[in-house]
Length: 228
Image (cartoon, rainbow, N blue to C red; front, side):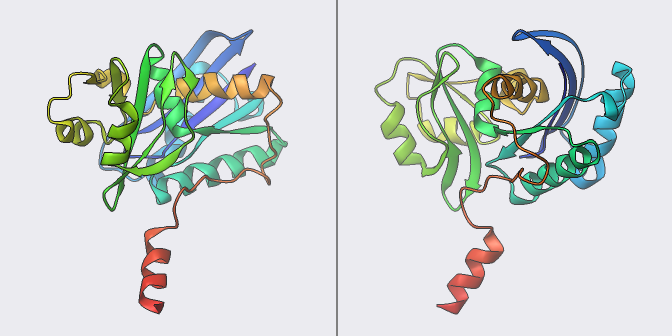
């Protein structure tokens, strides 16, 4: 199965075109950029390059896997909108992958706790063990997360909030940062999880695909606060 996977949930933008069959990753093309360009500028060119270097056309894609959130409201919205438009043209099935689960896939073994800076003194987070989900995606304070991981053996922290979170841990001896090559978004992980979801019948149409927000956008929160 040829899968196109995209992730634009944080600063990193990543696109992959990958052949996956029987849970085995075959040939692939991967482009990942972490710079000051906006996702609206770079996401489609990344996917076009991934297709070109793989030697495939958008019509060859059998499944779109999008990291649907949580994350930056703008980034999540751009990623979901891009995939909806691409998938609609050929009625290609889609899967909405958790950004946190995709990042945990980069580490895979042991306890993994992805943390994405959600601002307002919170992190988007979840806990995984050996690739298996142990808790739901949620927005939590630093203290709430520490309370959940303090009694666990070695815990690997990844995500765009990694450095901030590890620094706040102030020497907790069971908390370790992921290597830089596995800390950020990687569209191959999105593709691999997307394939698993496809096998489990968790696909949706382009029309049904929706971004995942764990909180209201900041502008909406500010509007409600002013109305009070």
